[in-house]
Amino acid sequence: MQISLYVFSHEIRKVIQDKKILVSIILLPILIIFITSFLSTSISASPKGCIYALNNTLEKKETTKYSIIPVNQKTIEEFSETTALYPEDVVIHIQHDKTDIYYNSLNSSSAENSLIAKDLLIDCYPSTTASIQEKEISQKITINDINPESNSSGKFMAIMLPYMLILLLFQSTSDFAIDTIAGEKENGVFSTIILTPHKPNKIILGKLIACIVYGIITTASYFIIVYCVSLITGSDSFNIKAIDLNISNILFFTFGSVLLSFLFASLAVLCALYSKSPKEARSLRLPVYAATLILALPAFIISESVPSIYYLIPIYNISCVMKNMLSGGADVMKTLLTLLSLAVCSALAFTFSMISLKNEEVRC
Amino acid sequence: MITINSISKRYKKGNVLAVRNVSFEINDNEIFALLGPNGAGKTTTLRMLSTLLTPTSGTIQYDGLPTVGNEIAIKKKLGFLTNEIRLDGQFSPNQSADFYGRLYGMSVEEIQRNKKHLFDYFHINEYADRKYETFSTGMKQKTSIAICLIHDPEIIIFDEPTNGLDVITQRLIEDYIFILKQKGKTIILSTHLLDVVERLADRVGVIIDGKSVFCGNCKEMMDSENVKNMNDAFLSIYTRNHEELPSTNPRNFFKKANN
Image (cartoon, rainbow over all chains, first blue to last red; front, top):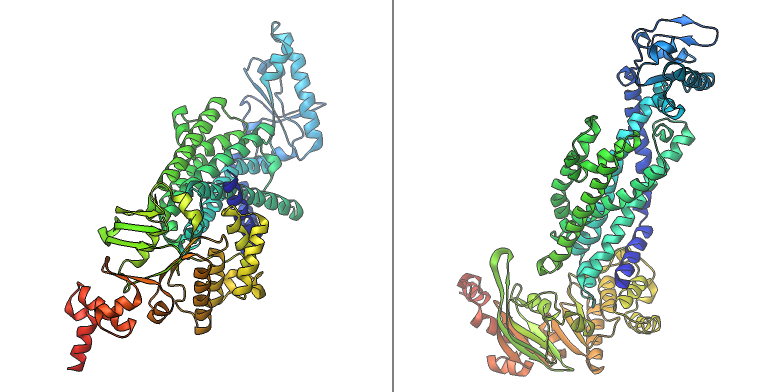
């Protein structure tokens, strides 16, 4: 293990000494900002993602305290002007299984009013249904933000973040693996290292760890730089507040990224080992790249829940789970199934890489 | 002693039989030159000696220790340099020496001592902290030799170490090969420069079309062919043993040209 760690530190030192890599780490996120700004503007402009319906029977009425508007007839612009929305006659709509209160987060009094409306509903519920508990009432009431900007941005981020994460991880880990193995094979460095008195597995393991660490660090740095630049420039293309990002989600993203990097690095190492040059390795990687793009894509398009069995498909599964997590609807079983599937696939790819080192044509 | 006993090597890719029943014995503390035309199987033989390749049949033994299954123990004794072997372009000779020294399990003091000796001899000090990718061919080759010898190996395999180098660098390397012999090292040398072979080698092995066709010292080689220099001796052996079409035989080509 000591040798693997030594090879790992050597690889990382190589990255640090390569100014081209460091520059690309800075430049790529800026490019991403331009792309995401463009895409997010396109999505925000579309009214499709912002249709809200509460109850068809509501009519517009002015009360002393709240303005009540039939939601299904209103446009987004009108919503933005509304201070608070809740059922006109609480008693009528109290029979519903679920009651929605809408507010506009851009208007501070609207947010306050939504809480007042919720309290009002909680007070009214027991008068109609005696047996109901306060906790249950609270669960029946949902407060929703109708601000179209934060909503579309959140949706956009929930879809884009996993997709970007998967692609960035794939690109960075596999590029690194190809350069460090196939590149070294081509220029003869690989033979020099293989000639040292150690099992080739230990050397490859060191390189694999370097690929994983490099992949995670570059991907994380992309997101951090994009976020920082968004904050500085005031661009909402990377509105991280719009997504549901809590501690458990962050932990899953970190662990999932490690597993994904492990899988991608193992696959890229395999491609690099069976190649004599980076060009050949990139050709071999092409089907894996295409498969990754294709597998990550359905989560981008399909919104409805899919059967658990589909969560055994690597890349597709993590893409779906990440998207669901950011949208606030992750299933524990599906999450576990995803992690298990990724761990098994990564372990298989890694084992196959190690076994293939026994083949001398792979080593030389 | 290194015993090469009837080794053959067939590459799976293209189903090429590169080496056929080659047998040699290389004594301790001698310079053994391996000769042969391009594509004769010299590099494949040297790669099998270095444990990079495994013979399809036959055995190689280092002091009775077979290479197969003892790769790590043998690699500790070996230094192998070929034209194909290079160092990482991102690193300086200093960094590379430290890295490979550590991989060979050397202490920092040992690395520093050997590095100083080799860098002084090959005049690497002046560019010891520059990146390898910025070097000229000669600088690269000298650095590669220094790194290949950083762990002070007992057996050194040089595959065309002076290829593409100027006369000064060639002589520097040749002299160092002789110094290594004086230090008690065993050297296996593959080169096309037969005057170098005549000057340095204790014994010579000739491989043609993957087969070993001669093993002995330079005088024996010239005597066997009844010629007075190594070039003629080699050409004569080659002509007698080469299997290809007559038109590709250089002696026939010259005869034809003279006629």
